[in-house]
Image (cartoon, rainbow, N blue to C red; front, side, top):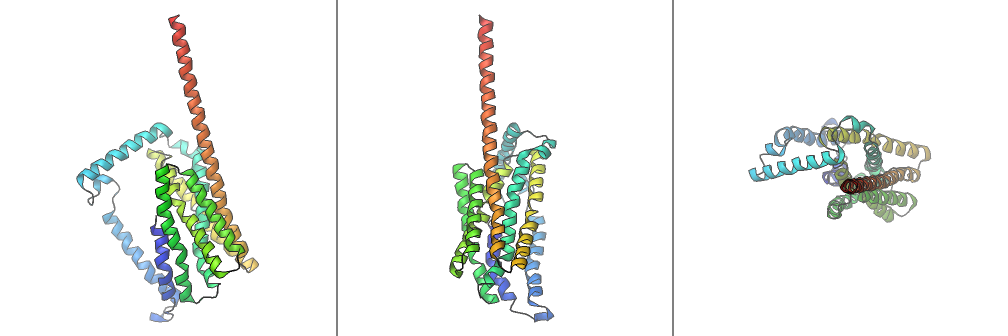
Length: 303
């Protein structure tokens, strides 16, 4: 997942540099950028068909013992998830957790794509040249990449997913709102870096949370629903941002509107966590009651 901010970290200055070659090969700067940056994706896409595998047992880049161990772990996880959540595919479509997680992803993706697409324009609005804009645009992604690794490891150590996701959303909201309200170029850059840190750091705990919620065929369908509908945020976030920018002529209201996306995602993540813990408490209470009733029946029978 760190590949996402790293691609922007490296791509932003390269893009700014390519934009200076206006007229090369009869292409405008942005056309040259599309060609040069599109070719590696095509090559790597073909390489994935050969090098990446669907299952651990087919991964030739792992030792035999590693393949066997990983296969056993995956199977054990499937059994445990099936025991906890069930495997019926149809239940996914009426599961409130699916649609709750979808809305969480919608908020993060809306904020993340809106941020990434409009960040160069925001930076350029600080009075920088095209090349300077590319270099400065890379700065927030340094913090995003480092934050993703740290926050993901912290989530693993604590075992918490929901609150790590929620806190990332609240941090992103604070960064975007502060960037909207400040008029100092250095402070704006700091707040945009905070926003990037929050927006990207939420991804590792979120996907660990989502992937551990479902299992088997139901897991495939659940993840597909969350991912497909959640990614619609990538349309609404930038669109709302652009409409407000063109209407008001300022980035202030656009950034404030964008801050709503991760804020809403954080609130929904918290609500899902409370709902999950309540279900667990009720299930435990029912289990305790069932054991108590069984003890009473056994004692009654013995009498």
